[in-house]
Length: 500
Image (cartoon, rainbow, N blue to C red; front, side):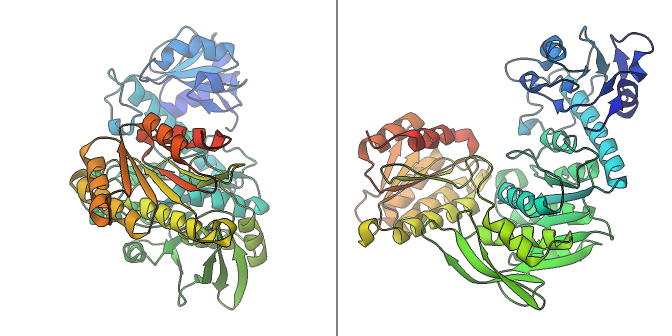
């Protein structure tokens, strides 16, 4: 974060300085990072006291200061230097988990103060030349964020969130990682309700906005794809007329967003007739795409280091941003060629010593990303045949896709059927709820013999099944919403020296 005194921070957030000697509030400065985990506090930092499932951050204030925090941003005095903001009614999204345990409004107060602090810091940094890039979409935000960080790195210092820090806590937390030496700040913007993206964009208004797609993630929250599209369009609406909006116009709902923004629009697609497009797309044996990147009057070959045909659109959007920021085509192509998976459990591919390939995509799942993962699995099995004969056995270990509402049964049934249509050798359905029963039933009904799918109660049972039945050379996709906990299963499989 930029250097700010405690008095200045208190002024920004509407709080008061507590447990600081008279006159020292102007002299004591925060020079380090802002942290909500006391174990991550470093000298010069600011600690956020937030309520959690197991403990209240206020109880760790003294430990944070002992670890080097200059002060604590809190909703009540904590006996150590603090900026105290009054508790307030919870105005954030309780269902995101950030305010789930905010019984007294202390979390809402601290989050609101954090947003005000981030907004003030962002405004000052933009005045000094910082470029803010915002990315949204139903799927692919994190992968695109990682590609963006890679293609912008040759142009200057880049700050991007680790993982999926894209809600009312992670978003301002990421903003406050930027300093006066930061050239590009990349932000993911997610939503569970209308207005969420607009609120995040107001904290750090982007000069470049990227919209990837409109799918069915969080369909249970929004009620319709049209409502999801309207919420995603809050990002291009937030970009000023002096800015640029990058739209993936292969998605008709995204293409329509050109009509709601005052910014200049750059269109990307997997077809000609747009500003930036990909042609001659092919996949290698591990489903890593290569293509020709075309712009007006120029082209360059691109080989991606990430996995899955769906990454082509993500790479196009990242390339478009880099070109708008002054990169040339050759620099972009070179950066994309070395931009491997960064965020854990997102198409993270590991091949063990026994030749078993594990595709760990267990951080998140919705119908669109499930289909993309299954298609990548099918391609890997077909393209990396053992000894050049036949194809590899493929396993899809799938957990629940959360937050689909009334469409959950139908969508899970459809994924089960798709796994059979793609000739996946074995589907392992993890979980016993109605949605998982629908996925298993869909696969059985689509299959020829009824043996294409196995249903197990939990991740431990799935791991035991896989360890007993995997053979050298098999390829395994593990995918589910994060709440299913299948990431640990995928990590265990990747760590295994071979089948038990």
